[in-house]
Length: 173
Image (cartoon, rainbow, N blue to C red; front, top):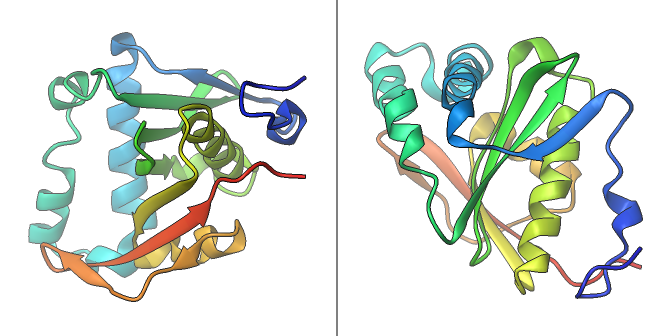
């Protein structure tokens, strides 16, 4: 099956037992849980368990704030595994991945890779030929493994290192 840009849908098959779907405002509590658990438990190399860094990073991950993320020009997607929300990802339809977090209980099952692939597919469907993101130290190797390239500069966000990356979204063969 082909989409409007001619990209084969076959490349985006999810691993067994993983379901991908658009999030709704009814998912804000699950999204909040996944984001906070991922940040606090998996991103220690970035925040070093510094209470100030953790507070800043998780400050806008509450359900009320997340509800405001549902607006035109952005998409939030979920990966479910074993009937639970296992990961949450978001994009701006202009070609930026805004978030991709996996719950610690679901690491190593292909959840993050499946969701990343779906986000890339959705940006390509919106007409993007290149995608961008700011990776954390924790996530940088994951993105490199999935074909993302580092950009020249790095920076930080409230004392947490950020690594800008890009990836071509040209149709895959």
